[in-house]
Length: 85
Length: 372
Image (cartoon, rainbow over all chains, first blue to last red; front, side, top):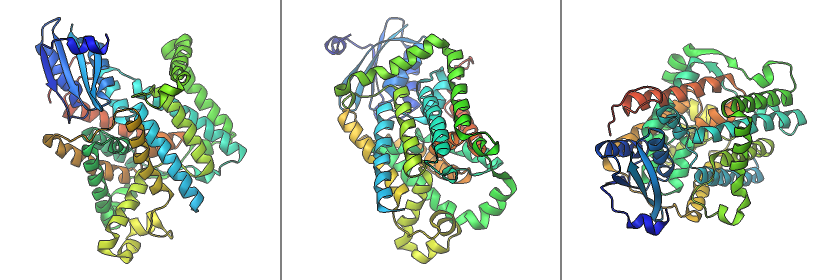
């Protein structure tokens, strides 16, 4: 999904994880996804660059969410779009 | 060490910092993500790095490009394992290892500057307890033998030993991924090189490519300068930081700082110190080019972790001795028995902390408690 389409999506839940380092972004994504219903969208905001690799891989491998896309909001800040499975 | 070697060390440091940042090559992530959700993203990069370094060092030793006493071989002891364990616990609590702390400091993480400050404080604490406490109560009773390396333990040419270890790693990888998977993996990791214009500005590179490039740098550094290490240089910097307070004589008289670390060298920044300083500079350059630099303010509730993790890394790296780079990279590449034990300790420390402190699932278990 391109950046404009991602930005147009409406989140069911937004978690701001700026300032957090590993393993908290993965733990917080898991906890937020567990509270959502199938098909709902979680947007996670993070400035921990490696979380753009670890969070998608963790939720994918654990069958928790589909990774819709990743948007770089500004230098070093990312939005991860995760759809609960 | 001459001025040329100091300059060269700075160049290697810049390259290491640049590459580590580009791969987000975090050794905590390598072990924790494997245990936690089965991801081998960074672990594969480390395997490529060690495979290339072992073979390259074997070739270099056989060709006479580097003397065998350039291998970093510490005595073998239970302290190798236990020190590694303390270091592994520390780096998991801090959220970054010795090299991870440096490359993230260059990316603008205040969290890791705090970790670094507490690591430096731990070196000073260790240095003043070394002779009166740690030598009689830690190093002497826990020692098993002197240094042991597979390179020197048997009468096989170095190049052959290196080739055998390389073949073993390739065979294990092929067994896990299949021959086709191995070929696809190599192709995939090299694909980014086909877009040189995109390379510098890319947010991140394939970890296997980064591992391979780090491996080449480790071999070149071994030939031209020395081995890649971090924490001994950091400890020397801690001595230089307190020198204005305690005086040069106190540093010289200290059994650890004066005896073990500096010896007869001048109490000044040398090649090893320039290497780690330029690792931070290299990571800064890579993150600015890739658009990932940002002054990142930490959360107040995470500061105890940054501090405690830093202290445990400082102590663990002295008590083993060696950090993730000294042991997992340079030690394993030198086929050192001490570093095999220390690496096992580091991995064990990550596993225990991940499971018991962070309450994370361990891949293959059904534990579901999730805490923050």
